[in-house]
Length: 150
Image (cartoon, rainbow, N blue to C red):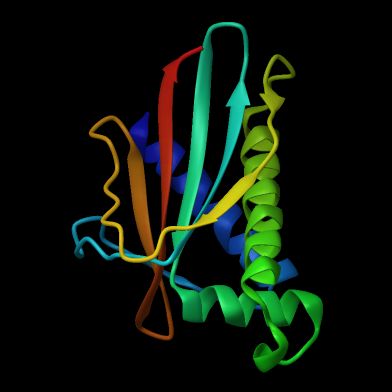
């Protein structure tokens, strides 16, 4: 079951990043190392019994690049707020894609959030399904799925 969730998450992330943000990523082994990233975005899916939290953590460089691609402007014109807005949109699309793959109308997609996490060390909880991704061989981000009671 964990492998299926991981594969669905990889497929959705790939599709969204390639289609909407013009970025192709490679997925790395989850044990490839714990990286500290600069930004985090999250979205909840919930039903009456449980909740799924999808978290994306990315480097500032990757956030700036995908934001510039998404907005069609130069990276030097990107602000922190622009990056947070595009990361909210990214996690919203990933959450929507994951929801569509679940094929269960009982789930509701929440409102996305994004924040700057700076140098805080952030690790997934043990029950989280996590994957790392790279852009041209450089660590770009991590994605996590956490399941919990509603």
